[in-house]
Structures are given as structure tokens and as C-alpha cells.
Amino acid sequence: MSQVNGIGGPPPILVEGLTKSFGEVHALRGIDLSVPRGTVLGVLGPNGAGKTTAVRILTTLLQPDGGRALVEGYDVVHQAAAVRRSIGLAGQSAAIQEELTGQENLEVIGRLYHLSWPRARSRATELLGQFGLSDAADRAAKTYSGGMQRRLDLAASLVGQPKVLFLDEPTTGLDPRSRLGMWDIIRSLAADGTTLLLTTQYLDEADELADEIVVIDHGLVIAAGTAEELKGRVGGDVVEFTVPDRSRLGDAVAAIARIGEGEPLADPATGVVSIRVGSRGSEALIESVRGLDAAAVETRGLALRRPSLDDVFLALTGHAAEEEEPGGRRRGRRGGTRSATRGGRRSKDKDMDMERTAS
Amino acid sequence: MTAVAERAGVPGAPAAPGLGLRARWAVTDTLTITRRNLLVWMRVPAYLVFTVIQPVMFTLMFRYVFGGAIPVDVPGGYVNFLIPGIVAQTAAFASFGTAIALAMELKKGVIDRLRSMPMARSAVLAGRLVADTGRMTVTILIIIAVGYAVGFRFLDGFFPAVAMVLLAIVFGVAICCISAFTGLAIGDEESVQAFGLIWLFPLTFLSSAFVPIATMPGWLQAFANNQPVTYVVDTMRALALGGPVWPSLWKSLAWLAGIFIVFVPLAVRAYKRAA
Image 1 (cartoon, rainbow over the protein chains, first blue to last red):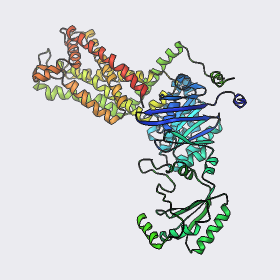
Image 2 (image 1 turned 90 degrees about the horizontal axis):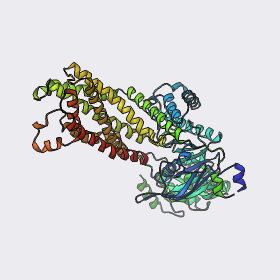
Image 3 (image 1 turned 30 degrees about the vertical axis):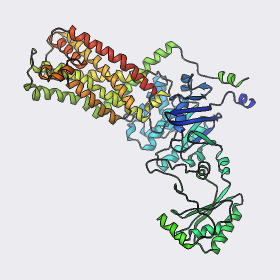
Image 4 (image 1 turned 90 degrees about the vertical axis):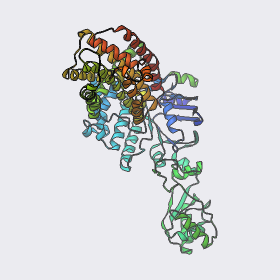
């Protein structure tokens, strides 16, 4: 309690036992969240996990079935008007009027926040400058690139100087360069003290931007903590390498079978072999070099790496983070079909079978 | 200090605005949305074509292509019969724009953004209707001007003429309310457009707007004689050309009131629940 008093109020976002169903679909099955002031919470989960439903409830767009949610201390159901005065929302698509210029788009939003005309104008100009859109201020937004449109959309969410900002998948559909630009902007917002809730299905994004991460799957929080804490859950470092000659995959697995804590994972499709080695990374790396050398298996890109959030997600849910994403935009770093190959002696025939299945 | 008390006493919390301020915001927010919608309308050539060229084409086509083959019993001939009908149809078709724009805003997340803001809740729908009424009025005046160029004349004086235009606008707004509901309920601009064709074309053509109902087969007359477009067009024709206004006017007003009573709450509910 002393800590709460020290900061001077309740956490900007507090969610307790929130539930929401759409008919038979249980989008949220009782989630709890608490986001301290000035921090970034990353809500991570695949499509359909309930992320957007949670954001829509917190931004007063949707009524929950049960539980409660407070934003800046206001109940999102009973004090919705007060909540709306405290928040900004940028959704999954650019919610802008494409026929209007960037300047006009932000002026309209400013007027709807009841700024005077001169103030709405200057606020629009200021935000366009901040988001690198000054040169495009007087062009229709439909001439903007995808990245520029999303920046304009984010600028629009900041017109009212919100204390709490909700970003629902802010980089979905952006090319890698625009994505990095968006990350820079989000980082600078967080640095300015805005409390941020960010949903994403990109593990690297949560890793990059969030102070705390909650992992949501099927409407439940299945894990929470910092990126480092979550990575710690999968048991430390990973030795990973690629076997170009797929027929030697079984030999490679056998060669490293005893260096780690668990069993090696081998992906017949990509030839990538990985094994968790806990905290004894360096020794394990040396042992794996010796083992592979003794077995005369040629490898590429042999390396020791920290576990990614991909590994975390797989360990927590038993499925890859992005496997449910439609439209062939899967971004899982090692594909969705990771087949565990048992360590130990394997006959050459079996390895050949495996390769045929893969090709 | 309990957790509840902490939450209740938020330092620096924005004060809730009073009733007077909220009423003022309802007006200014509506005007802001109206202005935005009119700006968008003027920037999109396709909208201008749809709202201006298309009704003008209909006027010329019916006047010069079909008109000669349609015998009517009104002073001044078919062109005088036609223009009130075309004006009513134009007013009804203006609602395509209402439905499509709302569906697009819904799909793009614009409505989500606006609903998450501390603006007047009524402003998005009200601003949409005000802007579309303005757009509709411009179109109606253009049709009347074109009508005058091709031989149409108001025969009953100035004030009945103004009353005809006003009735057309109120009728158009009523249809826009139906379209606002369908646009928000369907939420996809292409489906909305297709759906609009399905109900607006039969409703306007199976009426007294373009041909005397007596020329239709009996079963169709039963529908055409008892639907709102016919009542509205008959009233407008009586106002434009002279003749008994009241018999069709009260039926028109009853229908329009019914449409507003049913579809305004439906549209508001669809807006509040827009997902």
C-alpha cells in the first residue's frame, strides 16, 4: 500500500477477472492485469487469443460479461465517459479519413477533443512534426505509404494527450522498415511517461518494447513476467545449428544427444537442430563441436543463443505463437512444424524416410 | 485507506462536464463531423458523379427516351409528371452514400476511434445525416434546374414548390435513417451497396414515381398503391402541379413518422454496439 500511495494513486490499468463471451466463443475467461504508471505492458498471443477483446473492453467499446476493469481508476462500464477522457486508442488498421490531408485528419480529431480551432491546428502541426509527416501534411492521406498512414493513426490517438495509450497490434501488416520506425516512436512515447498497453502476436515486438509481458491464449493469461523471466522458464540457453545434408540429420541429433538437458529438436524441413543446454552454455557448445566433429557431420551457423520468446510460447502453449495467423503471413522464425526427433542411434533408413517426408 | 477509496480519490482527475457544456458539445461535434463528411464528399469525384450525374441522366433518359411512350394525365405532360418522381428517387438514393460511408468507417476502425473519444455520442450519426441532407439538397436543386431546362414547371406557386422540396428532403432523411441502420448492421460497403440496390430499386420503381400505377398488373398495383414512395410522390406532385394534397400527405407523414420511430433507435443501437 505504501508503494501505491508513493506513486499517488491506483495503477492506470487494473483488470480483475474479466470475462467476455460471444455466443459459444469464450473470448476472455477471467483475465487479471495490472499496469504500473509509465510502463509498457505487452499482451502477447496468437490471433483469437482474446487480445483485441480485452482492448475493446478497456477502451469502452465493448461491455464485459463479468469481472471489472479500471482505467485511471475509472470503471470502464460505469464511468466510461471519464475513461474516454484519459485514453488514446490506435487499432489494427489506420482509422483515418483517406480523402482528407494529414493536417485535416488531426484537426478534426482535435476539434472533437474540444480544442479551439487555433489549438487544434497547432496540435496537428506539432504531432505531424513529431511523427515525421510535416512534408506530407497537406497531402491526402490516401497518398501515404502504409507506414505513414499508421503513424498518422498513432498521431491521431495522441491528440488528446492521453495518460494511457492502447495500441492494438500497431505494426501488423507493416513492412520491416516501417515496423522499426514504429518501434522507435513507441519507445519515445514510453520514455515520455505514457502508460502503454500494446498487443502483439510478434514475439520480438513484445521483447523489444514491453517492460512486462502477459501471454494470453484462449482467453486466459498463461504466463506473466519480464521478457527475461519468461525466457528463464524454458531453461536457459539453446545450442542451435543447421545441417545442410538432411540425410545426416539423425547423426547430428545423435552426436549432441547427451550435451543438453532435454532432447534435441530437429526440423526435417529446414535442417535446423536445437537443444536446450541450461546454464552450461559454453561447455555444451564445446561438447557439441567435439561430438559433431567426431561424427563427421557438416554444420552451418553453429551458435549458442538465448531462448527467444518463440521458445517460450512453444513451451507454454505447445503450439507456435503465430500458427493461427491467416493469409500466409506466418512469421514464426522456424515455421510451425517442429517435429521432435528422438535422440539416440538411428538407422540410416529411417533418416532417409524422414527426408522423403520432408521433401 | 482501502483500495476502493484510493480508486475513488484520483488526484488530478478531469472533472465531468456539466449538462450545458455537453449540449454545446453535441452541437459542435455534430458540426465538426458534418464538415468532415462534406469535405470528403467534395474530394471524391466518384461521389459527385453518383450524386449529380446519375440523377441528371435518369431525368434526361425518362424525359426523352421512355417519356414519349408513357401517357399521363397531368397538366404539362410527362415531364411534369416525372420531375417530382425523380426528385423523390434522388432523395431516396442519397441514402446509398449514408450506408456506404458508415460501413466503411466501421470497417476501417474510424468509428471505434470516435467511440473511444470523449465526444458527443450522437455526433457521428447526426453529423452523417446533416451532411447527407446537405448533399441531397444540392442534388435535388440540380434536378429541378435540369427539369426546368427540359420543360418542367411548378404550376401551383412558390410556397407549394418549397413544400415539395422540403417533403422530398424529409423523405430522404427517413430513408437515410434506414440506410444508416443497414450500413452499421452489415458493416461491409460492398454488401451494403448490393443490399441497397435490392430494396431501394423496387421501392422507388414500383411506385407512382415514373409511370401511372394504373398501367401495372393488378397484383403489383396492390403493392404500389400502398407503399410510402407512392404517397410521398403523389403529395409532391400535388404540391408541384396543384390538386388535392391532404389525402396523400397524411399517409406520407404517418409513414415517415413510423420510419423515424423504428429506425432512429435501431441506427443508434447499431452504432452503440458496432463491433
